[in-house]
Image (cartoon, rainbow, N blue to C red; front, side, top):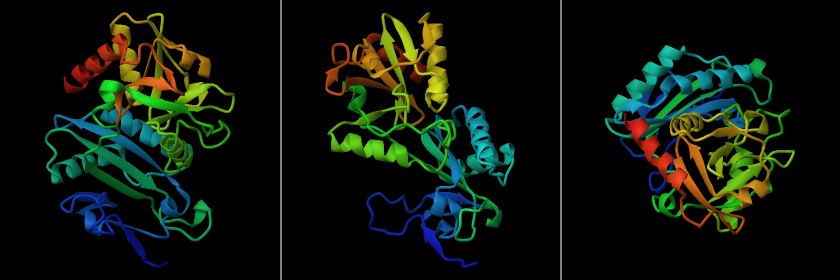
Length: 305
């Protein structure tokens, strides 16, 4: 098998390339980002065959680490991908990577595992040991001003994964549906796209779960709508209930989006982000709503505790 590889940081003058001093975990060791490489025969590259997680670091601590690791293993199990390390070993590797990059405040971890090096064919029987990669850096999904004005969204024409395809509950490396929906939003001059499932029901945004507020009640699509069961989504539901806000997982259609009093998205990278426009319809009074603003503040308090 060829040892040909691709480098994570191929172009030193690329403005989007990682920091030159970044340390990346690849396989069983830390290496400089400029030397971090995977084989061009890795099935993660060839077929998007792998799984990932995004984790936040707040005040030097990994937020909801065990919940993310558990979902990482569940995604791998669904794809019949046997991870090369135990949960504890992955946790230790993430901590070592975090320390190597001097993260004592806030940061972001991208944890991923590919199927590994294999032959030019989709058979998983001809692949070697899966490849584990851990990247620790910073992330900002949306500009800071978006949290003040709210996201401008469209409803995408790209359908969320059919339940008989790869389940949306699996965080696989194949995110083309979401990528194309995000591109559609950009082409329309919007910040984000809301995706519907095969039945025309509201699923989620390209990288965030979605919530509506109607009559003081918090509404969000159920797992059966074709959503990822977000870690931040669960935290926000818990915070809302502590506030005495009724939370209902309910099948929603585009009309519900248009007549919502408030709307917001949740996700590891996004945290809690207001949505103030959907398909040129203004949500509420066009500003982040009262409940949204309260939950944004509650989430900051919760994750900094």
